[in-house]
Amino acid sequence: MNISKYTTLCLKLAGLIFILSFLLDTLTFAIPFQWQNSQWQIGFVTAIVDRGIVPMVGMVLIVLASWIDSTLNTPAATAKASTFLKIFTFILASLLGLLFLLLIPIHFNNINQVKTNALEQIQKGADQGEEQIKQFLANLNNLSQNPQLLNQEIAQRTQVIESGQFQGRPLTEQQLVQLRQQKDQLQNLRDLARKPGDFKKRLDEIRNQLQTQLLDRRRDAESQANTEALKQWLRICLSSLMLAIGYSVIGWLGLRGVGLLSGKLKESKR
Image (cartoon, rainbow, N blue to C red):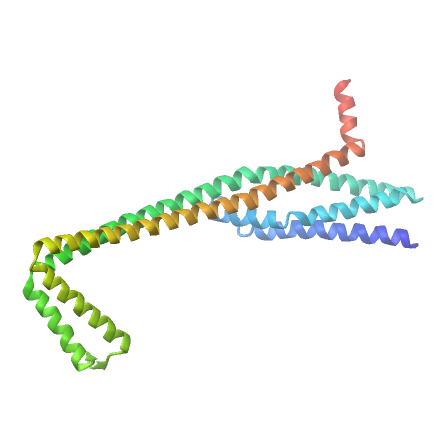
């Protein structure tokens, strides 16, 4: 076997390995098959598109090997096998072009669905946060109207701080800091409760502060969800579109070059 024939054989073998490797990966990614699950579809499409260039490299190697064969004085059997391999390659390229084209709307719809679900969860979290703010303010209001309970809470924390223990265990420095902060807050609340006007003003300030923080977190979460959806759409859908164009061009021009499409066109004209 001369060097040229050995080269074409290696190119064809490498090309087939690239193609078969992609098909095997596709089968592996599909297990377990859960087509009704949008998250599964997103993962499957992403994996296929990320490896979409692999069979294209194999096809280029096969076409290159076939071109080298055409420039040599190859036996009829070898030329026939080479032509069959080219036709298989071009048909597979056309099918992959169609596949990657169909994956675009599928992935787009799944990304929109995931984004919609994420925004709904963010809205639910915001509603729960609003209820927690109302409950917290109501508890503060009720606590301010019960001076005896306030004094009892302050006395309990003072006793724990002075003893340095809670339920028989020594307090850590962080726990002491938290207890002192709670004690100061309760004392401030007791002082404010003696001045209804100042207390109401402070409650309004706390309400506005908590609502602003909640609104900022909601906006950040919504912005992150929209950004992630846009990044996924741009990366996967545009990559899939480029792969669809590339495979379609390879398949269409290849089939036309071997005379399959032109033969069909002639038959249709007759």
